[in-house]
Length: 335
Ligand code: ACO
Image 1 (cartoon, helix red, strand yellow):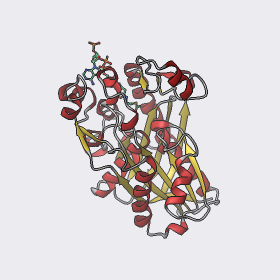
Image 2 (tube, protein in one colour; image 1 turned 90 degrees about the vertical axis):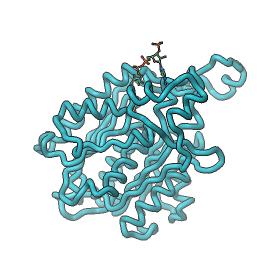
Image 3 (tube, protein in one colour; image 1 turned 90 degrees about the horizontal axis):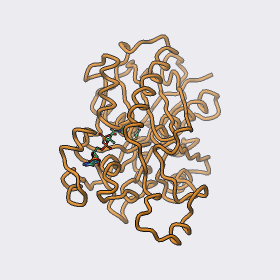
Image 4 (cartoon, helix red, strand yellow; image 1 turned 180 degrees about the horizontal axis):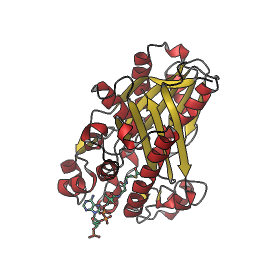
């Protein structure tokens, strides 16, 4: 049995910066409210007709492959996590295979929202551990801005989310003490609708129903979030799943060199930091600049932390996510 390690990282965000003041011009909100509740100062929004979820993922992937020091032909498999795919089907995994010009390697799409990248890493890790593949490309990418309610009605959700992509190459590692030590995944579908976008879907409302109803009050095709309920569940599940991962490896919070939490909300990260008694140099946050980029948030943050020299060989790096589903998970890495 092998281990897998992250051999290359990359991220891409669109150039267009949208500040809290910019949002206050299109809806009744303000910089103080947004910063106080979420920590967000600005986010990136794709200008229509430029990038897509796939194109951002491809740009992040190209950097990750280059930094892994491999040729793209050495990628054996693609895993793509997003809740904002270019098409209803097919998913963006195959579009990446096409746009990167890869041979007919397999491509898997992951539908686990904010936990998507953690789930993707877990899947890639199992393929490498089993010996099936040597290099797996894992991408998290989101284009939220085109699908948000950018009016006062949608302000509780739309100020939080931003666009961007991050990618990692996982590579076979012979040394079992290095790389991904363990991954831990959970779900609780009884809260599925507490953070959801239910239409268009085959379950309740398809596009034809939306058009037929032509109801200006219809919000079923915008994301819905029960913010306080999500907050309460997130802090509990984040803590549990980080502890689960540490205990599995006979480690404690004091052993963490770098915690990369999903960038849901700065207040959630700060709660976890305090709970585990971690210093500012042990937790990485960049939600201030990019907002919540869902499946992209961990790979973007991990790449930035690595680029800034905050992750060194031998460090214990912990990734943790919680999100819609609910789904949550953690990854314990010896860098
Ligand atoms: N600007 C100004 N006022 C606003 C805004 C806004 N953008 N959004 C809502 N308000 C108003 C509301 O209308 C309400 O006004 P009212 O009291 O007159 O009715 C008031 O602010 C309070 O609204 P709440 O929704 O109760 O605000 P709350 O304090 O709960 O903060 C928030 C909302 C930030 C979403 C909070 O619930 C939270 O942090 N939740 C955690 C969920 C989260 O972080 N989700 C991220 C995505 S999910 C994930 O990644 C896991």
